[in-house]
Amino acid sequence: MDLPGNVDTLKAKHNALEKSINTENSRPNPDDLIISDLKKQKLRIKDQIADMNH
Image (cartoon, rainbow, N blue to C red; front, side, top):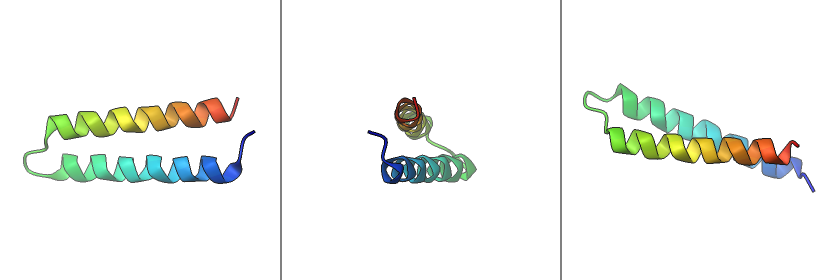
């Protein structure tokens, strides 16, 4: 069962992670480990959204 609320929640988390990545990248000395972790989380959420839409 695909619940639109769940997809919306995941999209909100995805957008928040994108904002966190951009914030970290804009720092004078961005932490590559933090960025890598955030990108992995973002990809997992993207995969979850794709699975819900199929």
